Image: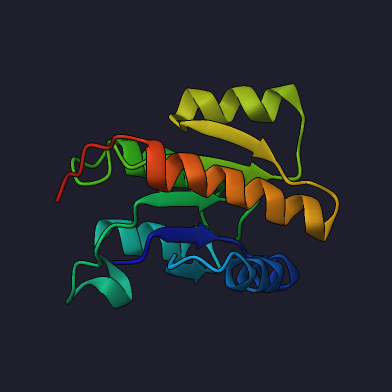
Length: 143
């Protein structure tokens, strides 16, 4: 099971995430999916994940502007499944628009984080997120 499932359709952002994860020097595993549609398939065990129910991550980090299903739609679908109802989901977006933030919380996210503008700031933010969500947060695991 991956610790973090990151849904990001921007290849540059996904690459930065991968490089920062390696720099954390912690045993955190991750999977990156590149569309909202693929995320829904993964979470629901459909499409290429139909023959195998993919193990749930400890944390879902989600961009909102995605190809296929939007991030909001991914959250709504996840919250409607028994298996993913309590999965911690963090919106990780460039948008600081109050309407986007409200929509994400209404859909069922646990936290909303605006992507920092620099590589170094993003690394510090990811480290703080993982300290809380992977080490300090008490979770309910639905299988």
